[in-house]
Image (cartoon, rainbow, N blue to C red; front, side, top):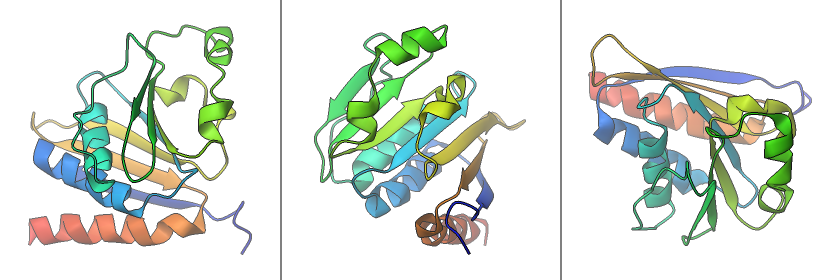
Length: 167
């Protein structure tokens, strides 16, 4: 099957922030240069906590900070991490002015919050992760989707981790 046509999706429930961070850590451990994670969801839905987990999985002890006001924060890790936030960007022109191609196609990985403002900018094999706040205040529903076969193993690992927390 052609990688362009391969569609994977998984929806998981995180019971608390620690589990959200752990899910991010699992993703971080599997990350390779060129990976792009497109995060979307309401304010306070767990995007920055998940990013903290990605950093942890990549061996960084730096705390993730929401880059809302600086737009891009770079972290040192096993692979450089470029954490971007499109929340304050109102239109495509503002996003285009960021010249994000050097990050998207550079030597690191990109984690982009509020990426839903401009999904057509990103590589086809990006992983989209949508965060929903559940009725139970501490719970989050994370929906992962990708077109990349390479990411099927990490989606299975995430599912196994969540299953181990339910059992």
